[in-house]
Amino acid sequence: MKKMWQMCSALMVSIAVFCASPAQADSTERGISLATANGEIQGSLLQPEGSAKVPVVLIIAGSGPTNRNGNSAGSSGNNNSLKMLAEGLANQGYASVRFDKRGVGDSAAVAKTESAIRFETNVNDAAAWLKMLKADTRFSDVVVLGHSEGSLIAMLAAQQVPVSALVSVAGAGSNLADVLRQQLYGKLPPDLVKPNEDILQALQAGKTTASVPPALQFLYRESVQPYLISLYRYTPLQEIRKLTMPVLILQGDTDIQVDRSQAEALKAAKPDAELHVISGMNHVLKIVPADAKKQMASYFDPTLPISPELIRHLSAFLQQLPRR
Image 1 (cartoon, one colour):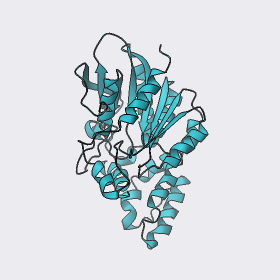
Image 2 (spheres, one colour):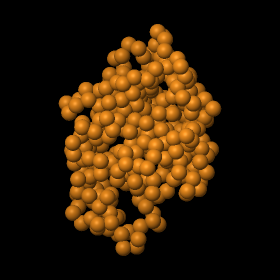
Image 3 (tube, rainbow, N blue to C red):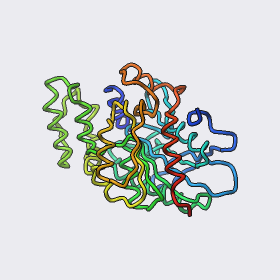
Image 4 (cartoon, rainbow, N blue to C red):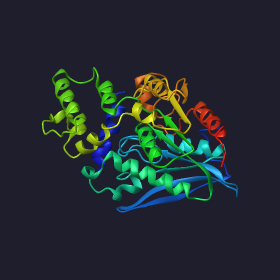
């Protein structure tokens, strides 16, 4: 199972004062779980203290073996980006839930083999979290926030379970197969360019392929192809048009995985969405220049804070939502 999730994360990385401070004393983090037919998906609830109802934000991690804190299994270090995001929300008076996806972290046992996972599995799990949070009397409103691939998961889950708002952070607009093409452009050896394109075209057509060169096995091995086929069925630009709730799009301009044109395309597809491009913010939400070495280092640096501007825009957006 771990190999499937390591595939996306390894590829993404290789090609390449309030919000970051610890949660204040008036907030408490505790475990929370979602029961499924295959076991419990484990998460963390960070909730401001007090008896008043507060909005809660479901934070959905991106692709690969990314856990609830924004860290990748098997990597040489942590960045803690999603943990910092939750702490930033708590400091502004908002509750949040973040969770380990099936096959990741404390939810590893919920998916025993990578071949059993489909993209829709992650979408249905997110929808189940939303349904559970909406029924929880501690919360006044439920907002869903997706980071990277989690943005698309959030869009689809919000179509199943109506929420007060949706936030896309570093989310793509194009089909994820096209995003992968862009990430690989100019980086593959010449003899792998055509095989890579042939495989991608087959997967987009819903077909598995046994003709995978050894050098591309980590991307397209047999056990991961069903997941990719299910993922490539969806295009974020098409899905965001279906949303009726307020939408916020946040994107950094030094993101080496998803560039600002993707966020601008999402905005064009959903003209009433609010878009903010954050100067200097990269894919793991840190302020990092467009320097390859510094970008790589930021993925494994838990001392580097996330962007204060990210929390500022997110908090301002949440404050203007109607309250139940």
